[in-house]
Image 1 (tube, rainbow, N blue to C red):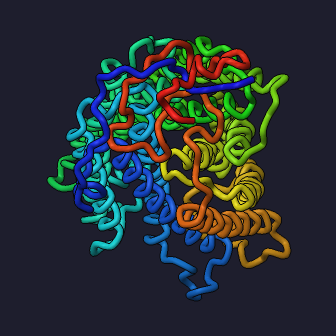
Image 2 (image 1 turned 180 degrees about the vertical axis):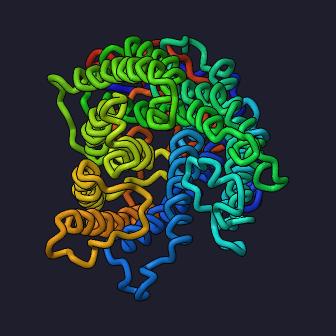
Length: 570
């Protein structure tokens, strides 16, 4: 069955591509073009993700071979170990997952997929990235200032984070907090731009039920972020005062309450999971619909489920605090809400499986990543049920079981989600096709290795391995310590996985230089971005597209003129 972008004709009205030549600085550094800003977010996030991965390598080597590099000290010092663990988590969530999935793909895709020439506030978009880049510089500087980087975990629990007397980082802790605050400002500006653009700049004929699913997901994620981050910003101001001025809002020695920070943080922290999850879910849906050669199953049910997930995400935060001293009666409430939120996500998963049922699946590299996203994320979802129940969480809390569960949710979201979208839209971004053989080698090497990293952590966690431990006495007795062998397997799996990322880097470079020229619509997809040339010019559309059907509907065979106008060459 033939497929083509969801419009029938072009009408005058959109600004044509800018004919005047632009300088290097205006085109690549200070651009207001949404596509360039999206790629700036994306590649900044990729660099930060690589740094975060190297941090994981450093502290995994410490856990596996303590004392080998420096007898009595280990591969890294205890303070550096804490800083690496803290900044690995912070960077992978705030400086990799969010800029890549929301700001990167959101900036690049939203105007193209809704049929407009740019964001409605292009200069605000430019400012958003500049503030984000500043936050990136600040977080990196915080690692090398006197006293070392902040080591109070990415959750920044007081009193450890509230005073240099506890964390030994008089400069690192405030700089870390400032970097997070700047990053939040950048994404607030970006979220305003995204929502306003989709509300006001859609192509004629595109109603709310014709918006592509990934655009819906990014918009809901932006709204969740803007609605949840306010209390945390207020709490962060108080924490900064504790660190710099010496107030004691969170220090029990002065009458403060460290639990107050936990409530403020997790009220934002749990919706944050869905802030990064939803764009990855949306990209997975786009890829599945194309490579299954089927209309996306239950489009509206998926959206209603996403809306329900967004609402429920605000009433589950205290399941992170079952051992923190909250009223046991409230623990029962949050156990129930935690189990409830799994229902709409299960509906989305079943809709994706139904899309695949009876399909003519093409196992191209983007589709492999999309399928692996569903499989790997399900492991994280199922193991989360154990932690959502207060009785089992009391035993498993702060163990490596939690680390494994967390990574089986965030690795599919951040890493697999990124590779799904990047390999799919690479031809549209750069006008070149990626090497399929290298893409599949990278896929299998990454997916196999990542399971060797995290599955052993479920076992060591149940056996009692506590997270944030610098060293273990039994590590020198690998011959008799079964847990030591499992820790070694995790570290070796990480090393293999990181090595396979070199294949991805090589594939990108080779494809950019010598890859086959991409057609306008190489995947035979239906959404509007595939109407434009590859890569799209500044201004996107020389003529405004008119939408006449949904983004996942197919024309009948033999009627290409219905969806591919004569004035747009194939």
